[in-house]
Length: 235
Image (cartoon, rainbow, N blue to C red):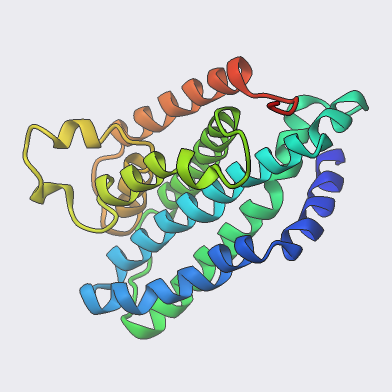
């Protein structure tokens, strides 16, 4: 698969990026003892850490990746060849996705040892949430890159999505503690349906609404990428 070849080249560049390595490999491990001290219940911890992996390892890393490759003319050169646009974006996304999946597996193992995590009663919803979350946040990263002039600016342009998801999606605390009028709005954030599906996989719960919200984000993200993604440098 041609996208895999792009992904292999991107992986070599990823290992040379110290910032990306810290955000992907070190920062999540530092977060585990903090969350364990807040909540000793294993399932919410795993759900929150998986959400963190999607936001940082997939979304934030891919914003910087897309911007860097665009400004270096890599995307433009790849587009001249035989690769299709989806293959280019998929290939560039593969290292970040692989790191995110590795993080998730590590989180389950570590938290399982520390607190104990029950076996999911409906694991297919966990799979749906993870896959759907990866797709949505990769699309959001591509859209955000269109409005990011430099790699350094990615810290600014990605901040609204990162903070909204971390603070407003139920990752750090339940949405039920927030005002009732605000809860329906926060349930429309891109990370909220992912976390709802993860919880439904472990603890049961409604799935129709999160599936619909996730599907809507996928459609909107696909349209936005086709409409606004930039292949040429912003100069």
